Length: 311
Image 1 (cartoon, rainbow, N blue to C red):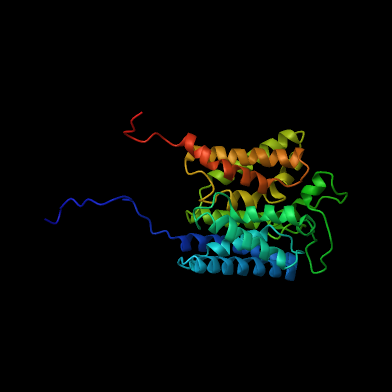
Image 2: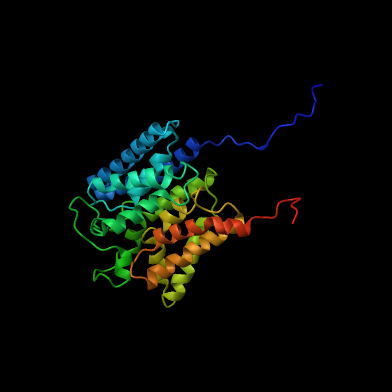
């Protein structure tokens, strides 16, 4: 009698992973880049990060409370959204800018569509696009690292001929000692966090690797086979942040292996085209958002045939 066949409904394969564990790992992975942002941009970065994270958490708690839903702010998902949004905002931004962005990200992009796991695009990127369209001056007021908050141009703007400043050294670019958004600067620490996420099994390296390699190949070709141009395109701007932490979002990226390859390839192509031929030096945010919208269609045509399916 001890070996009876027990019949139960699916799923039959379970995991010990929980949303809070996954999101906590993402926060840990972002911590080195967060500390670097605070080191380079001082109190400006602290102000933006705290405003974005606190507004995201409070908005999620408020929406869930008034909708009579369980309050799930302890799963760290709102913290991750606020932190990623702060990473996409310059340190010179006024405090109300990240607050409005976090409210939009949580209330409109996330909760209106059903909450965690139901958003069709990355909330932080959608909020960044909204803020950039609404307050372009504040969203592009880049400052040099340090306490003086001196205005500067980003390396991508210099590469695109929009500024006459000289390019920073590759060492400064990789460690983050350049102007830009808070979390776009320190590429090496973002990569370190990505390695941690791969080690923990939170993300697979497929999407980030295909995305970054696609940008590398296309910018090398479109840039006249200039290796220096390619290297700066890889390490400057939000490519590492977007490829590792945003394009891998579970809810807004394809679930099939082939679909993930197509998704990453599309992100890389769009980023390269926008950067080189568009009127805006950065293309990561818009490329991921456009591919987020296409993700359901990609899944539809790359899903494997169901075993036993009748035509």
